[in-house]
Amino acid sequence: MAQQAIFITGGASGIGRAVALLFAQRGWRVGLADVNAAGLAETQALLPEGTTTTHLLDVRDREQWTAALAGFAEASGGRMDVLFNNAGIGTSGPFASATPAELERCNAVNFMGVVHGAHAGFALLAATPGSAMLITSSAAGIYGTAGAAIYSATKFAVRGLAEALDGEWAAAGIRVRTLMPSFIDTPLLDQPTGGSNQLIRENVRRAGLEISPVGDVAEAAWAAVHGSALHTRVGKTARKLWFAARWMPGAVRKQGQRSRLGRR
Image: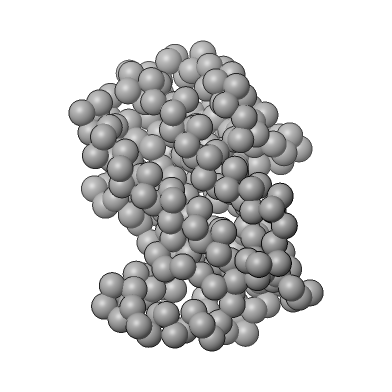
C-alpha cells in the first residue's frame, strides 16, 4: 500500500507545522505549502528526510493551486488522503475603520483560498479511497466576534462550506471536517489588537482565558480526519462557546457587546 499523504497549506509555521510534525511522526508523507519559503524550509528540516515536498503557494491564486497539487501528486503516487486547508490570516479592529483592501484580503485568503483548494483538490481526493478534507475554521465561526467581524465572517463561511460539501461529496467517498480552535499559541496572538498597541495575547491573558498549546490542535486534526464529528472544537473557550451559543445565545450576545478580543 502506498504511503498515506497529507497536503497542508500554511505549513510554514503554527498549526500547519504542528500538524505536519504529528502526521510525519505517524508515517505519513507530507506536502507543505505556504507563501513563506524560509518557513517552509524550516518545517521541512524538522521532518524525516525524503518524506516531504514543499510548494510555494498563494492560496488566492487558482493556477498556483493547480501546480502545487500536481507536484504533490507526482511525489505521493497520485494520492491525497487529507487536504488540510489551513492557511489563514488574522484581523481585528473596528469593522468600519478597516480599509476595503484589508477586508478583501481577509476574505480572499481565509475563504476564497479554501474554495480554490477544495475545487482544485476534489479530483485527487476522489481518486483516494477514504480521503478527507480538513478546514481550519475557528471559535470565531461559532458566534460572531465583535472586533473581528470580517475574520469571524470568513470562519462562518468555511464552516458552511464544510457542512455543504460533507453532504455533497459523500457519494465520492470524501469526508469533510473542520477544526474550531479558540486561542492557540501561534504567532497570530502576537499581532496588535486593532486600534491599539496591545497584543492579542496580552488581552487574552487579561481576560483570564486559556491559550492552548499548538500540539493540542495537531492531535485534534488527527482525531478529526479519523473520526465522525463534522466540527471539532479545540480548547475550553471553544467548547464553552459552542454550548453557550446553542443554549444561552442572549448571554453570548451581551458578552459580545462588552468585549472585543481577536480569536483564532
